[in-house]
Length: 139
Image (cartoon, rainbow, N blue to C red; front, side, top):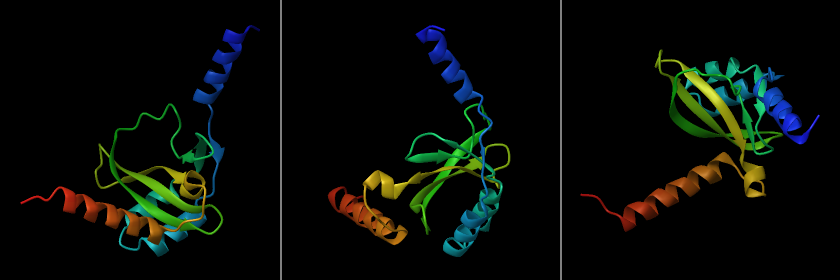
């Protein structure tokens, strides 16, 4: 098999990979505890039973061939006891806007190269918004 054929085979296997079984129980519990105001997000997390690891920094809950219509809703920080701080990407279904879809999560501690927390990340975002508002006042 030549190099081109090997590359194609790797691409095909990655594209058609069925995902790795995943137990979302702990993430559901953490979401319910840390985001009690969003029970629908915890319900969506409970539907995440397969993962596709994009890289050591991001884990996806939808496969490469998943073509669901969805619109980005928000990202939130979640403190996990073993994975560290996660940034969870949340979408809304385009066909049923009341339904949330979890896109995946970024391993923030790995991205930053140090231990962090959801509280620290929220505070950093608050300070950045305040700085931006001071530089670019409106009204």
